[in-house]
Image 1 (cartoon, one colour):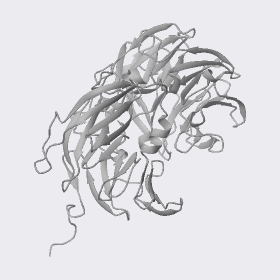
Image 2 (image 1 turned 45 degrees about the vertical axis):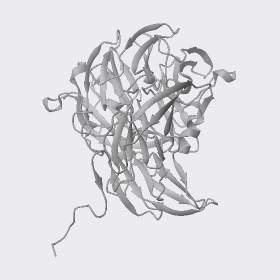
Image 3 (image 1 turned 90 degrees about the horizontal axis):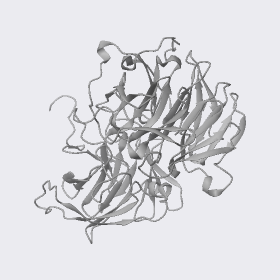
Image 4 (image 1 turned 180 degrees about the vertical axis):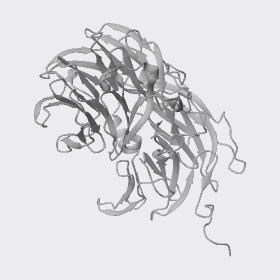
Length: 523
């Protein structure tokens, strides 16, 4: 249950913030949170296509629902309680009053090249609205009536340039905008006229480094950043971007909470900077943090130290006996041989970066067993990367770090249709024309016949074998086995066509119905 927030008046030092207070459950893929000026907060529940208001006594009310929104990614409130929503799925911004009545609908500007493409965050200071136009790699500045005032930035890596900015906040004290430059793994401060002020961070897990920073907020001199793949919140000085501290202990297993953080999407400071709300869409929850105690001391980067072997992203490729899986935390691709009794991890390749053999933001992988070539489309570097694959002999499987080598790269022309690409990996067609579709929002696999009629639903939300948590991709092997990226449980699962669970596997271990521990008395 949500614990009523205490609205305190004295600011904490940055390093004092990070003690767990409470958890708010009952959401469906929340992505953003914002403090209301008079108390309480707004939550953008992306998978539920809704925005809720939560008052300081814990009561919850619907501000806008699926009849208005599609996967909202950001939300903000002005001092007069005007609410601004990044309606990401509709590529627009909604400006509504506190009763939910639409004041304005904004799609960008008057010309097509000013239109939004997947706006993921918004903020307002009551005089302007700032929008993270993530798909166009830029920032829009709007008047409060929604009219366009300025467009800042373009795709790039230099000061004032962006790659997929997914979070922003208006720094009222300094008159700047602080931006989570997600694809460049850094934070930037930009003046309202577009002049770069400072940049902070780079890819990495050290203090002050970032792995896909997302939501961001600022209060006086303190910036807080949801450092998503490092499973923590980092604190910067608003005047120069200098590192001030961080909090968060990586959840070693899914569903851990009470201060353990798992893929944070957003963070918001409550008035005075004494409490912060961390949004974890991955866990369908918010966590409330306040003053740190000795038991809450920062413990360093735990992402890789505590034995979490792989987080298995949303990319998958399969042909013949070779299965390729994306590992976003290390920017690497894992290769499995699935011809064995249990899949065997035979190689890993890739690293962070824009170089030919490195990956920034891959959106597609395809493998052709006849040519033994893998193609990766990288939207970050805007390159198609081709690799030659030489698997170890089937009768002598082993790990071979040199099994995959780069052949070459080809520049990609024009924007990629990432929505279509993402949709392709959510379904697989069987030989009889029926289709299996993974549903990340409902944590199931749905089986439809060739005419679109539902045949069966496979799985349910949970952590046991055969249960799923935010499945991200599906393929079918030559034996007709369904192989599913069970992203939320950090594992892979196999099912037969009838939905029977066959196997759970990852790196170094697999479970089948025959190998699970037996229960009950001995015979």
